[in-house]
Picture 1 (cartoon, rainbow over the protein chains, first blue to last red):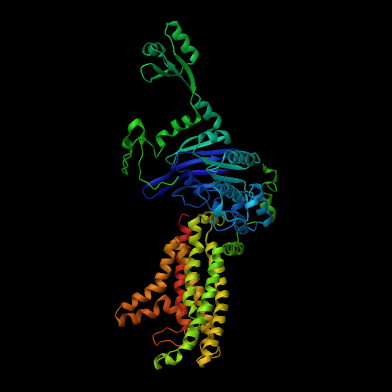
Picture 2: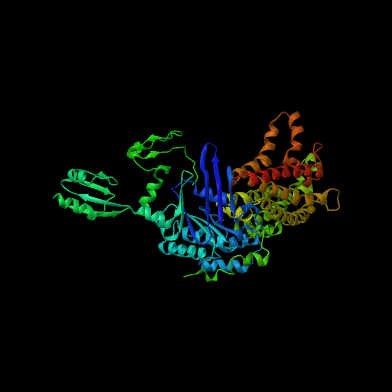
Length: 331
Length: 278
């Protein structure tokens, strides 16, 4: 169980994490989602005591990370950037970590086999591929057989086989009753791996809900309708809970009505339809809608990027609100 | 593919059974593993040994072979002990760089994050790195100094200008070669933790040890004579010098001052390491 309470981190003027509170429960995989620069990594670094919070606290099973006698046996962490000396072999890297706790060499061999690095354990970690590096990071996280695991973007740079391996591993670990917090900026990945979601943007909590609820909320149907008499049809369809967006002269995007009902209304009025397509918003779209206002670095046309620090709410092309609080943010 | 059935004892048992936990002794062992598992460490230490021994013998040989051409003044101030230990000046480069790398190498590669998550109190890491690298340097460099002394005196004996360990101050000076390099190692460790970057740490260390004395030398002599003896380099090098000028602080006073500089830097490193985000 991880309890984050009113966590705030400021770097000078810049607020990376702001009054963040949430709880990560054991037994399930909790996804920690947010766009790049939203404060996920900073939050995770504060959980394991690498960064000091400006305000607030994090408790793991009721204790501060720093107060654990054997931190590696309580919390296993895989942080975003590589945390390995490139000149040292995987085996010696893990051995040095194990020795700080008196964990026996046997366990080092076990975790190496567990993550499938048996063949390269004596090779310099600097020569590892991104995927092998992630496996080594996971081996380090599992070294102390911890009850809590914190992984920052573990699937980054992995091939499909590696992604599936991590997904299964995380679910197995959670099924054993461990607390598992995994960050990602990909909603689709989290929908497959996690059971619960904590979504943040600009360092603030946006959502704390189950994946099932999120998916249900995201599946609001939009029906794509094409008709030569679109404006007429639009007037017929308009009702209380219906929103219609015109997209060109002959296209309507209707939400709030099932496609069958739209077809009936059109037929009754004798309006010909050339296209009637129900579309389900993808999870990614739903996630983007949720975090849209909180995305810090929008891509877009050059004119939409007024990079003056301190200009908090310049309306940008496409209606996206652009937040430019200066560079140097840490995700 | 791998499954988790072989993840080990059920959750929590591993910890409970074995009394795992961070202790200073365990962190020492861990730092020893880190030190010996990097090829760059081994090469640098080997280089330091070769510098002390080979350069000391080479320069002693050169002195002996040119002794007849030396001026009376040079003969009078000739220090056979210091001459055979001249390799210490070169070895301090290898030792100092390695000391800086103890921390800067971890900051540069990201290893520091793994280290600090394993030892969240952080200070045991500073002490362990200092002790491990300090002891390794002390042992290797003391032995090297003795070998250089014996070899160097053998070269000098051809002109009967050699000395023995029995002469006043000579034994101290030969031990002093190892002691001086050990404190250089500690200065490096502290600067690595303070500065975090390898280039910055090395520049600071050798700026102070090698460049500062040159600059002080440009000052009016009434100033430089009063400042120079207290510079870290001059104070530290007193201990492996037998024939010294009147302004020198003396072997042990100088060496204690040199240790004092290292202690201040280590204390600063401790404060910063404890407070700073990693």
